[in-house]
Amino acid sequence: MSIDQHVEQPGGLAWFKSSYSGTNGGDCVEVATAAGAVYVQDSKDMGDGPALRVGRDEWAAFVALAVK
Image (cartoon, rainbow, N blue to C red):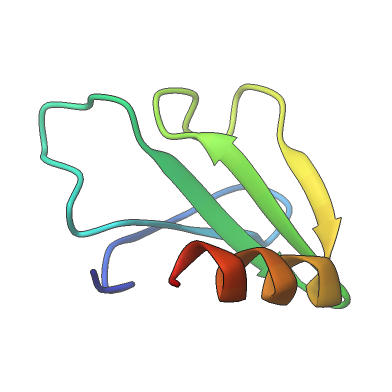
């Protein structure tokens, strides 16, 4: 997985989608970072839909458990 793909959205958030996600859409999530928070959204929404906001510490804990 890489974080090379990104889309700049209004509000200054740059959304990153997994390189495992194809160009045809599909079931993927995107993440964006801001001061003190990480935002998660469905990649099909591309900034138009709801986003989940979590703290950086909570995100780090989630990622640590997800990569085990």
